[in-house]
Image (cartoon, rainbow, N blue to C red; front, side):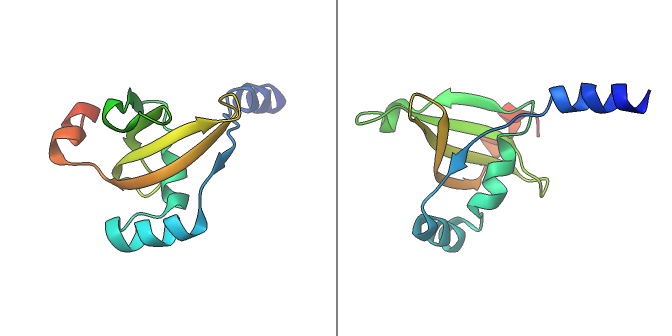
Length: 106
């Protein structure tokens, strides 16, 4: 019975390849108070909402991900997909505005 539960859990685990620039991570922490390590946890939120970022998608398709982090904060993550969508690259991360938080349900 324990093995069955483990298998069920194991089959539902998301495996994602997420990357970011170290310097941008440091700049983002100073500017927005959010590390990309914390931002990464939002991609594992089953209730996260993703939007296409029309305003900044001229050179590449960018997306916004709204969800809850491992620190229980509602964050907005700007990201893009690389290498035929097998790699997620975090561009920036910040605490969601009140308006965006309401969209999430917060």
